Image (cartoon, rainbow, N blue to C red; front, side, top):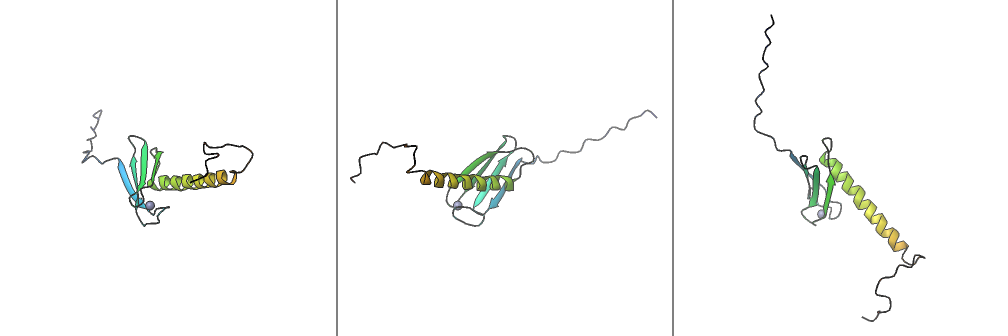
Length: 108
Ligand SMILES: [Zn+2]
């Protein structure tokens, strides 16, 4: 009884594309499902963009990353960018004294 049953290989079937697409509501223009997340697991990259207002975001993915993760990363990134923007606005008249090249040219 040393006969080993050869396990028949399962037919691979049509190769599934590794990219997944999902649609979400845009943070910026608030259109429903205008944001697409395109995941390319082979490349390890996910790209998010809004087809209405053309916002873009790109992030890295691994085999566990879901489109919703990219979406929430985008929210975090947008949130952080906004906070940074406000922080630099608040620090505008501060002590760091970082001046642009437009110091004295105020006449329009
Ligand atoms: Zn948008």
